[in-house]
Image (cartoon, rainbow, N blue to C red):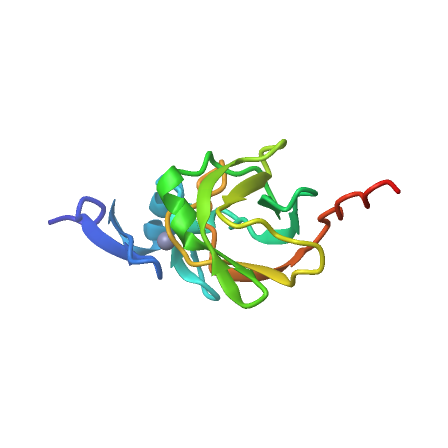
Length: 163
Ligand SMILES: [Zn+2]
C-alpha cells in the first residue's frame, strides 16, 4: 500500500440520525468529500446532512379566518403542499378545548397553510395552534420543528338585527 492510494472510509453522522460514508485518501479530504455530497462539518454543529443544512421553516404567526372556520398559519418561507394526514399534527385549542382539524391545505400564498376546523371559532375565543412534528416541510425540504403560537382572533361578529 503506497501513500496516496490507501482509501479510508470516513463515516459522518448527523444529529438527525442520518449517516453517510465518504471514501477519502486521507482524513483531511473528508470535508471536501462531504461538500461534494452536500454534507458539511463545523466545530459548532459537527456533521450536518443536506436536509439539516437547510434553514428550517418556522411558524411566524397565526390568525383565524373572519368567519371563524379556519386557522391560517404564516411561515417564514414557502412550504411544501401539506399531506392531508398531517392535519392531526396541528392542535388547535379554542378556549381550552381541542378543536378537530378536518383539512389542511396551502393558503393564498405558498408560505401559508389553512387548517379547516370541525368547530367554529367565535368572537373573543382565545385560540392557540400547536405543531407536533410529523412530516411537514418547506418547499426546499427543511423540516418544521415543534412550535406553539397564539392565534389572532379576527372573527367578525354577526351584524345586529335591523330594528
Ligand atoms: Zn440531519
